[in-house]
Image 1 (cartoon, rainbow, N blue to C red):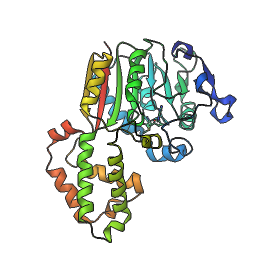
Image 2 (image 1 turned 90 degrees about the horizontal axis):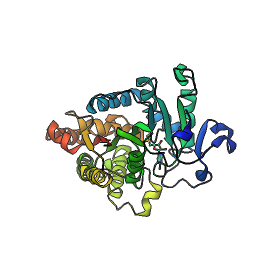
Image 3 (image 1 turned 60 degrees about the vertical axis):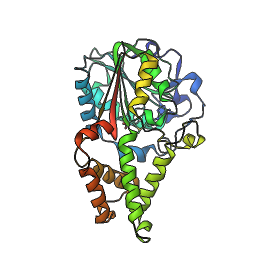
Image 4 (image 1 turned 30 degrees about the vertical axis):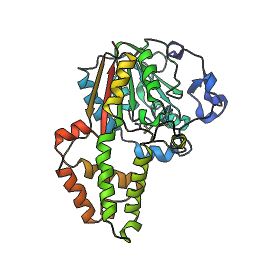
Length: 331
Ligand SMILES: C[S@@+](CC[C@H](N)C(=O)[O-])C[C@H]1O[C@@H](n2cnc3c(N)ncnc32)[C@H](O)[C@@H]1O
């Protein structure tokens, strides 16, 4: 793939700075630039992040559903993946569209290097015509990415927009890069569903005894509540420069962007809708936030969570959404 036909500015190899980054390109202007609003989790601790969060089959499932929602995705020739990390969405895209060229982008060269090592082992790393490689890796801030107009058929971002100070800039760059009729598909956390999670945790913390509040599980709930509270602040607050998770979205936010940027269509639907949605979310928080099993919370706390789950219909879960697919179509 010729990246000169994708980006509107010259790219250079990062290997001139670090041999371990061979095969990863970056805009020439980004060399030496400070990475703003991203922490060591994605940079120096990329290996640990990769080990904890690689779940290709889950993302394959989410992407397949999204393609169905578009009315069936015709074979794209160029896909731009935004915030690719170590490949949770790139790998399913590569499998699903074997003839597509895929540009994987991320602000973290360390995560891109993990993805590069994986992709280089694939038999289809070359195009079916035997031409140049079908995968390209570009280290770029998604809000600053400068694509040529009308080059891509599909843009995908798996859990990326909520990390960006100004997500509208990412959407504007996708709008520019897409061909007419192209889709930009994202998967993001939403505020309404997470407000229920937060209120359940607050309820549990209010009921916990003094000794229970000192357990690892209760401390995790305290951190989660604090984290939800911080994310309510205006995004101009400097606190977000040191936080990876910045946003929980609303439908209204994306509808405004749709109107401002002139997208033809916006489709939003909740993910993981099921009667035990809160319980599932709490189990994930315990596991990923503190490596704790469900038994780390007392039974009475699970009863609060289960009773809250039972009080909400699946239709309401769909309306509120803890996480949702957000799909924009260009006219
Ligand atoms: C939650 S991870 C998702 C990674 C991957 N899409 C996946 O599903 O595993 C968020 C990714 O966004 C990247 N990221 C954070 N801020 C970014 C920015 N400003 N521009 C581009 N990528 C960014 C991180 O390095 C990380 O790889």
